[in-house]
Image (cartoon, rainbow, N blue to C red):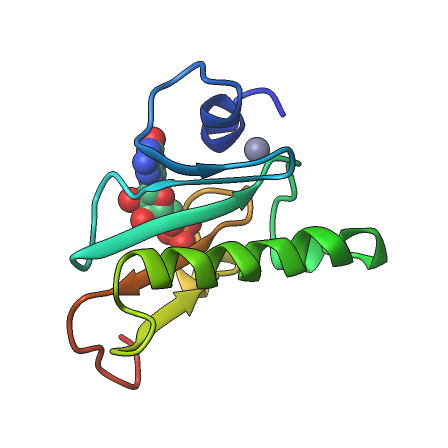
Length: 114
Ligand code: 5GP
Ligand code: ZN
């Protein structure tokens, strides 16, 4: 998708600290980390928001969670705990309209979120 910053990261047009890649999924460090571990897991396919998900995306969604689990294990937060977040639209604070699963960990997480 033209003008999408995460599509540009997928296409290696702008740099990112990539921690995982396969044919469908990319994971990279958030540029403004909110926790000691803060990685974004994205489908390579451009899907703007959760509202745009359909039946054809089942496999990719399951892949995002499989990668989250692997990253949690690699960063030693699987047992301590971590948070997965996918913000949708304005009130939730979505700022990049290419779906991304935030994995946050390495510190205590408050609830409810702000
Ligand atoms: P959202 O607010 O849409 O849920 O999350 C967008 C996230 O993308 C933010 O945490 C922000 O720091 C991160 N981000 C925005 N632009 C870039 C970028 O160019 N590179 C990286 N690595 N992260 C980005
Ligand atoms: Zn995109």
